[in-house]
Image (cartoon, rainbow, N blue to C red):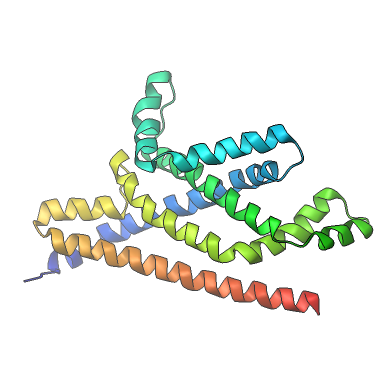
Length: 222
């Protein structure tokens, strides 16, 4: 028979673990997006060298298992003088991987913008940078918002792996509780439900942003 009394008694541990999970995920998404922007720009640039370098980056990091990368960053890099605390190692690994996916998502959004809009912007005297930031990027974000939200949800789920490098996240909290209370089913079920709630909230927030961007786009067109 299930008994969640141990889970409720250690609710503060789950709360702290949830905070760590949210912090790691949020930092990874933000840092990954910052990396993804220049990678995406290189992918669609007119320079063949930049295109190939960006394509190599994307192919490499999309092909690397996150768990192996976490172990490499935290346990192997100190041997060459690059030691990172658990939180930093987790953010580095997650950011590098999610940046590759975000770059491809953004590239798809930029490609979907009609060429006529760029031509019209040039005719109005906008510089290439202004076209990129004021015309292309806002529309690309509207187009790819569902895919970006899915990537954020994937980062949250993938963050469960950071417990292997000592981050006291939600997964590690459930592991500790399962070991101390001998109630693994309840501990892991509680963690599963918390992850589910987090991602449901992210999905709802993404849907709200998608609707807001769609309304803004319609007003702009009018």
